[in-house]
Image 1 (tube, helix red, strand yellow):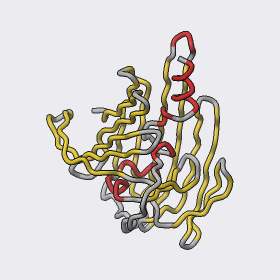
Image 2 (cartoon, one colour):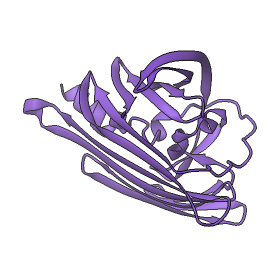
Image 3 (cartoon, helix red, strand yellow):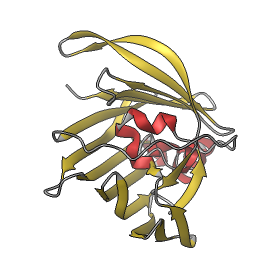
Length: 233
């Protein structure tokens, strides 16, 4: 049981996709970055119920809100996990992030992570062709055309080779391999999704996107321990 506490609490397994943070790092060959994202035509709201070993552990919510200015949008991500270990106590994970995007590029970022009492914060602002951040590892400059780990709401993240880890304020390598089409149940019946496998030495992930390119299901698998994401209906 102590090994489970270490794995889930201190190594951030419970982050899920959550924000999709540093757990999904995979060193690999560079690929061309995608063009700037287009502004979503309407607000997007996605709420996922997360399960660990079939037990509910909390929610992961994403809101994408078109800004008043043309070509811009704001992203709100909130994760609240609690793993009950019975006599061995609880593990909590809470993550809050706010992003502003303008003309398809990241303009501002603020995140706060409380990983079972270990609190860290990241702030960042666009500066010319760079995005400058301050986080638990100090100052970091990133290219201005990168997506962030919070961009999991969009299938576009699966075409990236690097992303900004919004939880640590650094840039990490990223790789997603298409797995073809999957069929899943929804509130309105069966739906077809495009599936991707994301792998690294520590963790493997499976992420599904609907026909609109929006995230609809996910799974993280580490050493046989799984966190499943199901879209709230």
